[in-house]
Image (cartoon, rainbow, N blue to C red; front, side, top):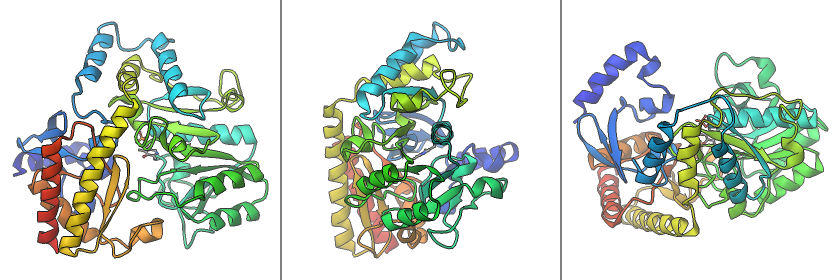
Length: 427
Ligand SMILES: *Cc1c(COP(=O)(O)O)cnc(C)c1O
């Protein structure tokens, strides 16, 4: 079934580290080797062995309108005819900025970058410059891209200083990152208490999507906002995943909380590389050339990425979210029924079109410690069984499904049927 992919992988791994340009694609956490793709259309994608799958990953979020979406593709073609980059301002960058400001409640001014990592990295530099303090707090199990300061998890517990998660990250950088427990406000209080007037910002995925989908408990984000203002620290919502995904204005709109800074990525580029960070004028005015915090990029605000992203953002009206909710809730209900029928230890977490099926005996996954206890071997078997049944899932227990509005009734039925078959098989 995968001969050509295996062959392509064997060639690629000689010339690209691990054969991939981003580690999760290597399928290591599902004990396998990567599948190579050649095309996609709507809800489906096709690998180089010509197998077709219903895509439940959507390139990790960007593809809210599915593959090769006509309007997106046409915008890219139209813009590319005029040139691809000038290294000078274009009006489409202002159009993009206006659109973001219109959609995301807390943003008054926004700077475009080329990836989510760049957005979060720049946002914490800005927070540190603005507050003139060095420390940041992040949460265990939250991912903010691969910048040094974020490759830190909780060492022996939530209240310890950060230890690097990757070689090459110096202890000096790691010590400026403190790690708290998601959904545990006391762990944050404790860090503020121990580091009085030293914390510039708290960065959080308001809906955590990088340990599987973990939703915030009631009032957790509200209390976090209060703690930040009491301690003169900025609250940064990393909405690279949740932005434009869970609602037009992201998690901050859904839960009605305004962070000081917001980072965006994934959907914002419509499938091309783009990211952004933004917030109130007084903070954003600290960014160069107006302010003392330097940040730049040769291809920042690239007109093709702006054209693709804008063509998507323009169409994100409430209808789209109603449609996504309908598709996703049907799948959730179907899978829940299958769990009951088969008696497999599993639960499903969902916000809009983001969801994760956790193989765990817990009723709900609340934080990184809960997530770590999941049966990843079972997930791996489940993943491969779904693949054989023509459904492409994230190749890791600790990632979300991102559904597109191109998933039709047949796809929904096929996902639910394949899920039942797979749960029965792996039980
Ligand atoms: C994907 C992601 C990032 C990193 O974005 P890249 O474009 O991969 O650099 C940062 N934060 C969150 C929450 C993400 O999901």
